[in-house]
Each structure stands twice: as structure tokens, then as C-alpha cells.
Length: 141
Image 1: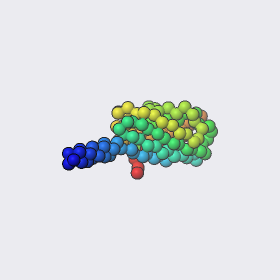
Image 2: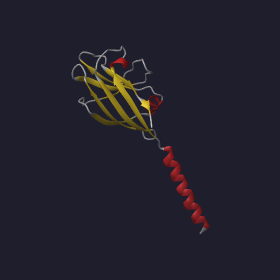
Image 3: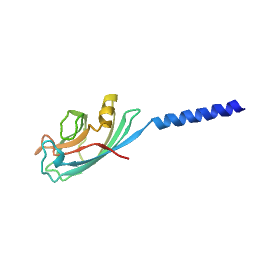
Image 4: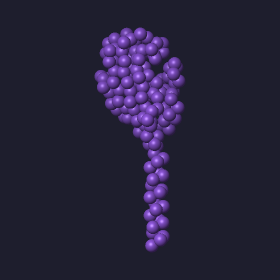
């Protein structure tokens, strides 16, 4: 009977430790023209909220924006890049009207870049083909 109790307690502990190791990290970004490279003076603005499961690479996101100089022509998550640097797209957004929601499964290298703070999101327009609004993804609570 004691062995069964010890075995059950060990199993519960192992499951609890496994659940703790599967971490979800929330990210946010404030999108504005001043953060584009090069910066611009648009009145457009937006925000990104995202969640990453660091074990599986599952990445979900919600994006809102408005006040742009015209319709969005492209939107992407980019990386790896520090604040003030540019990088190629990592996730291309196919449906552009705000609000945008979606998901992707990231590779281990992409998880490492995002976790290191080296991803940003931006929205492009005809008036600003290199990007009208941009924000660096920052880990939060």
C-alpha cells in the first residue's frame, strides 16, 4: 500500500513538473510610424498581442490597426532584428483588413529569435511601401 501511495505521488509530481516546463509567453507591440526604419510621420497606429508556447512553437496573434494613409498592401512579422534594424519577413499575413487573427508553428530558431526580442511587426501601404507602422514584439505577462 505504501508503494502504491509513493508511486502515485511520484507520478503526480512528474506530471506537475512537465506542465511547468511547457511555458506560454505573451507578447505585445505598439505599431507606429516613428518605429519604422526609416521613421515616418503617419497618424496610423495599431497593436499586436500574441502568445507563444515555447515547447510546441505554437504562435497565435491578434492585430488591430487604423488611420493609415490608405489600404494595407502587405503586413508581416519580421526577424531576426533588433530595434532600429530591418529583417526579412518570417510570417506573411494573407488577410489584411483589421482586425487580423491567426496562428503559425515556429521553428526552434524562430522561437529563439522571438524570445530574444528580435521580432517586429509592420503594415505597408502604397504611400509607405517599406512600412507605414511598426512595433517590436516585447514579452509581457
